[in-house]
Image 1 (cartoon, rainbow, N blue to C red):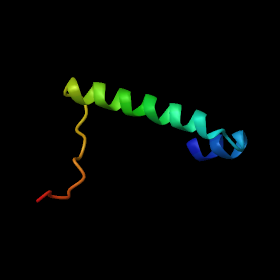
Image 2: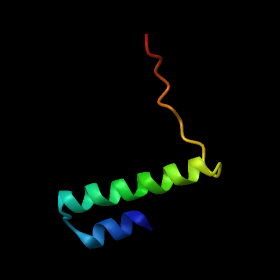
Image 3: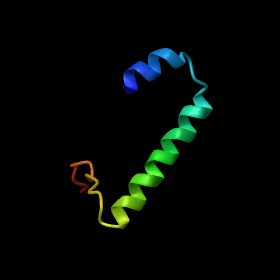
Length: 47
């Protein structure tokens, strides 16, 4: 479904992509803070 939408929409401005990514990330963080979503930390250890 998403793939079909992307094919139909065609090229998108980078600024629109950045804004959409920020919106998705904000929603994911809100769900994580509410305990409704678990976000992985990336897996790498820092020394």
